[in-house]
Length: 322
Image 1 (cartoon, one colour):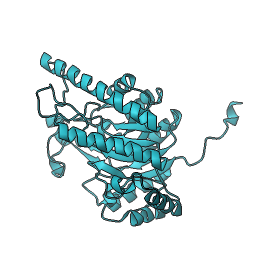
Image 2 (tube, helix red, strand yellow; image 1 turned 45 degrees about the vertical axis):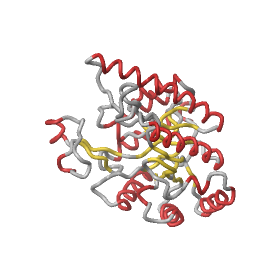
Image 3 (cartoon, helix red, strand yellow; image 1 turned 30 degrees about the horizontal axis):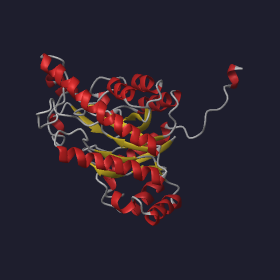
């Protein structure tokens, strides 16, 4: 199992300097953004797609530092009711899939997207309750839109031999494991999870149970290492559906935290062990979005903890069971 890093926190550095910095700290994989909210500072699609020389230079850089790419990231809303915005997100996804194929990268991380509540609406609508009944009707409309779009995209990904790893994110149609499996069932097995526990903690979802639930169905394609701390002083009063600004830390019910600052080392060791139980033994890609630390300190704290948690060798024979 490798420790990886989603690279936006290092966008102040060149890709070459960022890779060197991470390699010095024992990181074995990167997850660069190629569009959408992560941007493409380290890996502009238009500079690498269909350019064999640029791709060869990238491979050489990675080989020099014993580094690999775990996934290409493009998080946006391909189901947006604004056709121009949806088209832009769709282009990002399809070009990311094509570039992943050319780079021999097996995974693109993304969002499911979120439609409006009806064909005449202009704003995406995150529906969290079936009543009043028009909300249930709107939710069914959204799934009709999603099944049509994702069925086509999943077939495109399959043609390129690339997995689509959806981050289960609130304010997207797929934000928890049952929704992820519903979309997978409606499309194909290229659709799976970019398993990010940070969005599940504050929803009250058990992380290890969710890993087992998805893992039994071989539906975990990639994993983010990102923590969350629920601050009960606030959540006891206003719950966890909190619209307080992320940088108003003292008044939020929860914050994204560096690994180990929301849940302890024993918990992260349990996550690693459960992932191995269900057959995932690939990359834990650190996503740093902790506003209480600097990017480099937050990354380094997370790397230090995960180095003690991950397994680097394959399991041995259970000789004691013979």
